[in-house]
Length: 286
Image 1 (cartoon, one colour):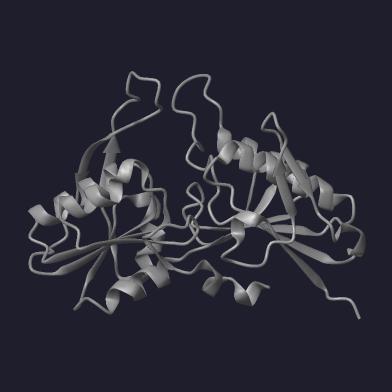
Image 2 (cartoon, helix red, strand yellow):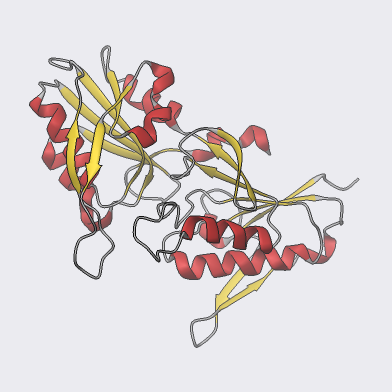
């Protein structure tokens, strides 16, 4: 009797499962993809593909498109676990003529045959659950419980905070609060950066342990400002966690330097700071 679900792992998910998709590069750098077990997939079978689309997100997305289109030759029932969804931060058009990258990427995934995207704390959704974004159904799983549980073992009666309202869903059901944050206009440079201009909170945290939770840490500017504000307001100890740790330009050390006791993330993007295993939150779905 054939299994109802077939699971494929790309080679960049080696820590999540044994790779069974061939991925190589041609001499000119273009991607080569082969799925050896493709002929054995029955048309009615469910297929789940694990693939990391970061780092090198442009080429990793191309690889994903190729894998999905290849699988679609055999079945129409395809889901994909993409731990960190790139291009998720460009979900609003701030300036005239900007690309709404998050929607375009999701629509391309749907066009390639993806029925459901399973991901973690997707930046533009700002809530847990299953939603349709563009033409794609997305199951957004939050790792907030794991992050808070990790730190709670080290804290006494901690105050749980998100550094802005976008991540407030990660703390609101735990009695947590969200800071207020404003950003500056885009910097006049080749990098698309909007730095934090203001951050505030009315929370009383004097003498208390504080846990700051966010969906991602990229350049670290938001988390550094949040840590500095907590220090000014008299927090005893400050712990920082994010689902996705990009940690650009060694910013985790800068967050520690700003006054944090510890910085952690999940293994959506593997690093020395990965303390939360995303597979613990997804086993039941498979």
